[in-house]
Amino acid sequence: MKLKKMLALGLACAMTLSTAVTASAAVKGANEDEANTTETDETLHIALASEPSNLWPAGAGSTENEAQIISSALFDNLVIKDYSTGEVLPNLATEWEWVDDTHCTFTLREDVINSLGEALTAEDVAYCVNDIWVELNASNDTGQYMVGATVEDEYVVTIEFTTNAPDLIEMLSWSNFGIVSEAEVEAAGGIEAATKSPTLGSGKYKFTEWNSGQSITLTRNDDYWNDDYVGYYQTIVFTFTNDAAAREMAVESGDVDVAYDMPVSQASTFAASESVQTIIYSFGQNAHLWYNMTDGHATSDQLVREAIDLALNFDSLYQVGTAGYGEQALGYFGTDSPYYTQMYTEEERAVDTETAKALLEEAGYGDGLELTTVGLQDTTALYTVIQENLREIGITLTINTVDTAQFVEDAFDGNYDLILVGEYTAGRYPTLFVFMQEEQVEGGTIVGGPKVTTDEIDGLITEIIEASDEETAKEKAEEIETILKENTIVSNLYSEMKASIINVDLKGYNTIERGFIDPTGFYK
Image (cartoon, rainbow, N blue to C red; front, side):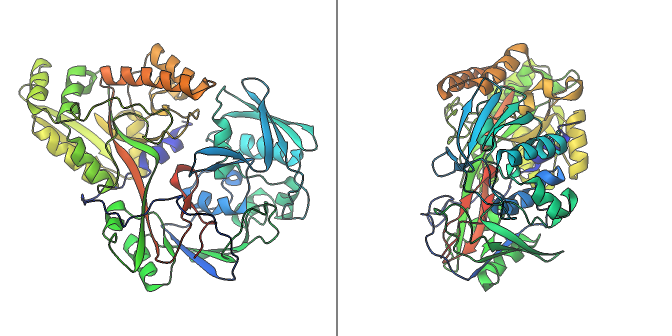
């Protein structure tokens, strides 16, 4: 099933669950500092939670978080996104123009030199699109929305997409769309070898060494084509420690400068510390609670769904989910999205136990109801809050905690009544509302479901993704959110957060797509 990997990523990512605390002004966000202007011969040490299996995700036909973080320093993209402003900016491409709904022509810079000392050309972009993205990544976000590329001139190339979606240009800023040349890949020993030792690309840093199980080392590219970028650190060393507490202690001891992707609850306990900096930030993803609406499940009854929604303590849920640093999701989109509309008032989000009980009585469950949910280990705390909320209205919720493989299987097979899904809603990518897009899933079952969609919902999703302007897209997004609200198809929970602990003197904590850390902007 082609979306199983996407589901595993979408459902498992970023739901950090914790004990609620009060937010502190000592916590800093991402993308707040000015760009660095100084070079040194110093080394930056970044501790990641796990070791990647490759360093060139597109070449491996995969999308691993750690691999994308590291590869973002090695490869350049046609465009980049400024996450402090939300703008999509020229990079390897100086300009682009939509020829029609599915064809976009890119004009390239003529001063970019790759790892072999050769000029970047349209042939290199076409090689990436045709031989790497489409050929090797047809089942993931890198290749599934592309048909191919055609060289128009030495520095002009046209990319054909499978669907009409203006925000596909923004997707090209993601790290899995880094540009390489066929000659570089061959010089590295072929595609398989290049995924492990990627001495290719035209990025800000170059691959130096991989000590399996220990570290990966990059060295600053002093011949980088973009004079506006200055890398403070000559060397970046990535180490791998699954234990979050050990990563934090390494920052306190001075052995590590950045402990990336900490549980928000754990990071928040260092908010007042003078020995480290605490970084907590949202990244364009909201947590949602979905209902199994297929026959045979009590949650197919709208009265039951309404009762559950009224029983949920949304304030407690956001406190647990974000340690108090996030906010309740009063709409499907995040508040920093241009498509955000506040669909609920705070009064509508208040707990109403008596009305919820009356709705269950009307639905025929006045004597009680048993429901099940499925989740990974890190969702247990949030499900426990939901469990207690539902107990107040006579619903017994069984929490089934499983490993990732079983979770994906249960999600697709519908072995649950309630399920938590975090969707990345920062842009109108073709993946938007992927948990409702029936046509993308074999057999017609809804990803993250089963849920039930309609022609109206499917049509609105298409209109949102294809709209030529943000204003129209926002209007259509509000229409679909009205349907979601009126039918209680989903309960919006909270804005998801990421957290890191960094050296007290460090600046330049910037992000790339999905809130991943950008390792190239740090400085003192």
